[in-house]
Length: 392
Image (tube, rainbow, N blue to C red; front, top):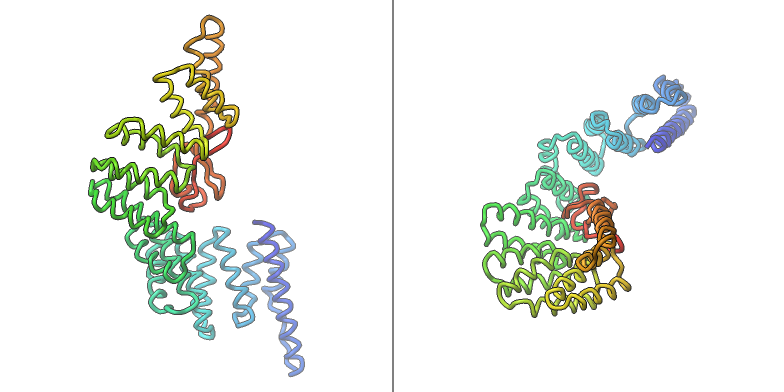
């Protein structure tokens, strides 16, 4: 950030020097003389003393607002906001708005930046009023989708999911990006969670289905809809929904398996459940699938269960699988062998517990809980179970 600030200060200084040189050249032809502003030299002095923030302030004071310098002022305001100096950013953008000579297009650009300033400062009411006014006055303009995006950001921050859905629907009609479609689907899921607290199951199911209408790949909505069907005793429908979830994204199989097992036990027993596990394990093996099959085989044939686990570990080694193998061998061990296995099992268990189970595929944020919105980068639907030796 310091390098960016220094580069921007140098760029501003060079631009101002060029602008004044050009201006003085024109005025020289007209035999008009004007001294260089004192603020320019003050800015250079701050720059030489590594006082970057003070240098920017001085250059801003020396730079007149016109069509040539508008972009520089706008960039400086953005820099102050990114540095956390929100009030300076607001001051610059408000001073630009006060200039009668800026065009309508430039005014909308400044208003968008000012709305971002207000949101960064926590002045959500002021940001909302400004954006709502722009939404009605900037229709069919190049800035309308940006206005709608900022409004969605605002309502998401406030957790006003109904308003976020309303504006989000407008946004994807105008600019249907994959990110916005995914985000809108999760807004419906958030609304479903709100109604779930009130046990209004019809509305819960309705929002999960609307999420799937928006984004057919939203596995959160499929799992949520299956949960509602399970609560209502519609176990066959819940099974269909869970199988669909497994096809949507096999990486979430560890979440689907226990829910699917519970539904099968309530109607058909374990036959269909085991068939599903075997089919999925052939397509894409995972620790969750292997462990579920091992536990089933243990009920009838312990030796076969152990042999199956060893074979699976050869082709799909995981720490969880190795821990399960130690557990199986503990039952038949005695004396020092058993003591050694107990110690090894405890060490592996501590390792498994210490390792995160989920990770954001966007920024790499790790965690022990599944977050549908990444706590770090704030993107939706990017946190998934970890796979590989230390995961599934």
